[in-house]
Image (cartoon, rainbow, N blue to C red; front, side, top):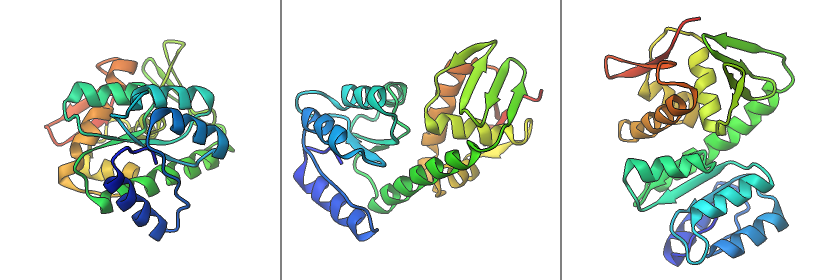
Length: 219
């Protein structure tokens, strides 16, 4: 965990430790990169605003060195700020103040997605939808032959929608399937990731249906 607020860091560390995690805490960006190289963590909880290197640059460097699931914490609530975080490789984000129960659920969900990715890697499945090709074994996505760089969460969301093209998935259902919990207050998370998918794959790939959910175009 990378967090310069000692009160927050202590509370999160105690809660995650109670869940069985081995938690290491650092308070700034340079220390985070050093600890990352030394320990090779399974998941990173990363504050957006840090002394020295900010969370965006820390995330970018971590993902360049070795991809890892990143849950970013931010006090910045604007949509553009959240999308910037997703753009540098964060898999998920939470705005401060946050629910400790929700944070634990999201950490578990990130780790489950890594496990599912390992299972899919042994299969050889390619899904083609319009101009989009999804290689589930290699976890790669191509748009008209050019590779689109998706985060783990974006890829998992796309694959879930691709299981039944044309079917509407309500936001709460997607939260439960991808993030491992379903709370109406957290549906903004789904919206942000869909916006990121539209930027990377094209605006017509994922449709909003009646304001309640999303559907992928049929092949």
